[in-house]
Image (tube, rainbow, N blue to C red; front, side):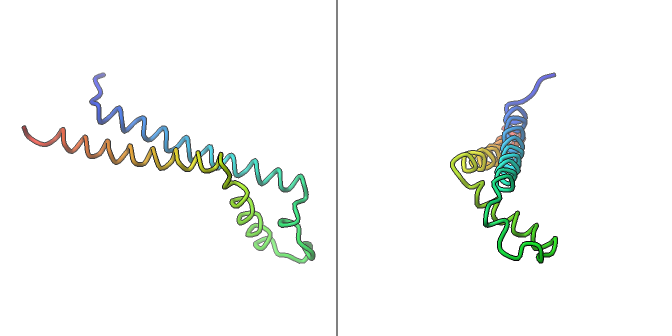
Length: 101
């Protein structure tokens, strides 16, 4: 199977972008679990028992993302952006390959 350079670049770009996305999602999950285990005050404010399930989820979502945005989270986000830029480059390269000479 012969792959053109644009196809190879597109495959690598998709792998990098999805890999970065799933790594960022797992990093967020890990940070959220650490916050729950440590009984972080941001997740367990006074009157926590009176909060609805939706309000608890909103608290978890907001604070786990803010906790995730450390150096590691920024590296994973950078990998996602790099993958998307490489995918755009692969598309441009593909379009240039289609152009008649």
